[in-house]
Length: 151
Image (cartoon, rainbow, N blue to C red):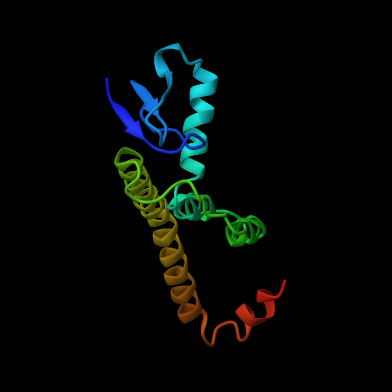
């Protein structure tokens, strides 16, 4: 079984084995821990990690893809909210959690790129079609696009 050294309020990230506090006292074995409590413990550890704000930002960026303007504005406002840095966690304190955070942030960045690609392609296509239609209609229907653009 593995052990981890971290503060009592943060616990270790390990899903199995034992969690040990700074005084190397055995707090509990995760085998007897209820899944709800374990889930809450893991959520707490993630939320207290120094990269948590980066994780939230990456998630919000994914949510903005294809969202209406009002929703994008709301998500940007949420993103501006300060995420307090925890005093009980630092990079390197739990290498397994550090690796998880780095990996998950990277996955979210790649996911956003994949989500954005069809929207970017559709936007480019529509701009090209609008340009072609404008060029075809030049002189035929004077100011047609300008007259209808505000309606």
